Image (cartoon, rainbow, N blue to C red; front, side):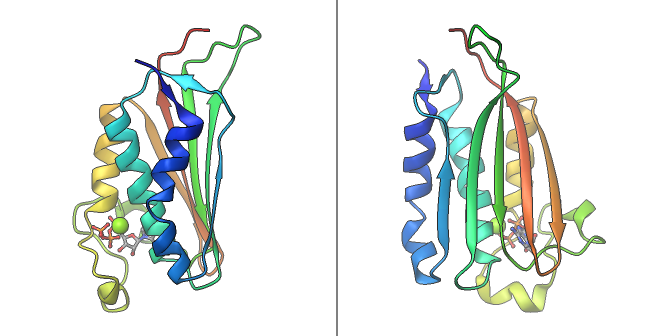
Length: 160
Ligand code: ATP
Ligand code: MG
């Protein structure tokens, strides 16, 4: 049955509000209201939780983590076949040299620095696997000291 994406993304992100609050990180969500699609809730939830957790973990206190979900190429009839999910932060960024490797299992940029955050380096490899199994695409843009943005495009079934 179809998922109402505005409420779905909102309540998924709400799970991480306490975590964000501890660092005074502003967690913003933007999804059009009444947007329905036939989507795999478990996989979509895992993708969002992993990327937003990273955003919170790798962003200094007082920063911003933003989640945007939008239909792609919507026709005049209101039909669309893909959604785009953008998760961005104002965090520490990822060095250019590390970008090609961050989706590998157990890969972490700076083991000494990030050890305290307790991660295992599996999050992004799981996200990549979930996106691939949706026949979607994921790409990342990042600038040191400015922030990081993950852009995911996945097919969904939607007919108006
Ligand atoms: P886990 O997710 O398994 O708890 P993790 O967060 O270290 O651990 P990944 O989510 O796979 O592992 O991320 C891999 C590495 O990529 C991280 O260790 C971090 O160095 C870097 N990284 C991931 N997301 C961001 C981000 N939003 N900003 C800066 N660096 C990031
Ligand atoms: Mg992670």
